[in-house]
Length: 198
Image (cartoon, rainbow, N blue to C red):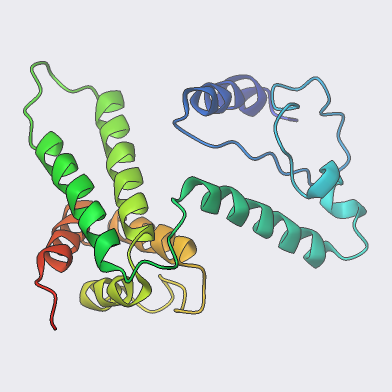
């Protein structure tokens, strides 16, 4: 809030994206600040109760609270999994959604695509892949990670929540050193299309 550029321009853009549903804004209060009346004062801030990190007796505990709050927000965006599902029904739902997405992805635009449109399409692709991968049963997701073979440390271990693993995998895949989101989408389609062994 101390930077005119960040407070005036970047926050305004972030809040607009939050209102449009293109982003999720989660304010994190590090030091005592009069943030009442700020554009984000109606949002859930972290750490809990808006208590600044430096006011916590243990700063590490404050940051753990922040991480847990972000995790809850991310998990609230992912679809709930059905514990009774053996995984194959989920795979078929994902296949159906992925098929619709792939068909939409191959349409040629009738007008030149601006960088803003391109970024919006890329964000939509990431969100679609996030949703599809979060819905995969654990063994199938682990198989996909094994096939992509990201460098060590890029994807959390199997014991981490799958949504965290999915977000990390997509971040790596979409980075300059990753294989690209199209490769992840292709491998996901191959995994879903493979016949079920009896």
